[in-house]
Image (cartoon, rainbow, N blue to C red; front, side, top):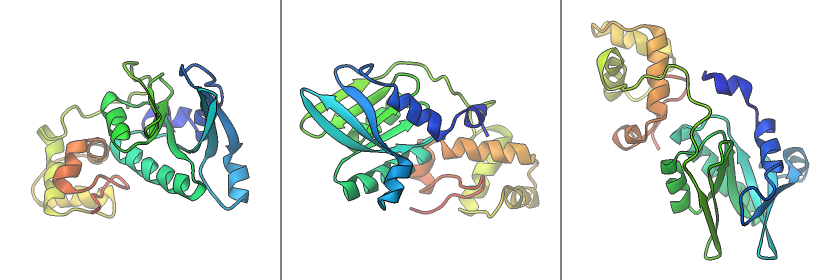
Length: 218
């Protein structure tokens, strides 16, 4: 687990959104309802946010998510879109960090997203687009594998090419060992985490790692 995941919580993300105010000029952002209040009404987004612009106020269903690799972002997008449709509002994500690539993906999906680093996109189709990027990631993963497709970690990638899903990291390690490879369990876990955050793996293998050892089908 990256160290930032131990330091952050959904409450911290939502508190940051609540304090946003007019820092995302020219709009003003605030939290209208908490997840607890919404769950009592039968809906379960993490919060409802209000974004004011040009004397109008728009409501957003908020999905707060601590992991921010591409698969986690896409899952958050789907949940936010579902709740937004139920509540007839707009979808909004709040995460620790959004890269420029992730912001472009959100724009293409017409979904708003904000991070704790000052980056974000707010979009109301045919009405408003506010885009801010360039702030560095304050929440990097610890000791990432720089190129999972080379060296020892490439054995993990090859194992997934032979079989798309494993129940545990140990089962994946056993598969690599059975085929003559030498790799440690921590390397297996790190390789899986790297694959989960790598968009090109989605296009090649139609998924990303779950439980440190699975590449599920779409």
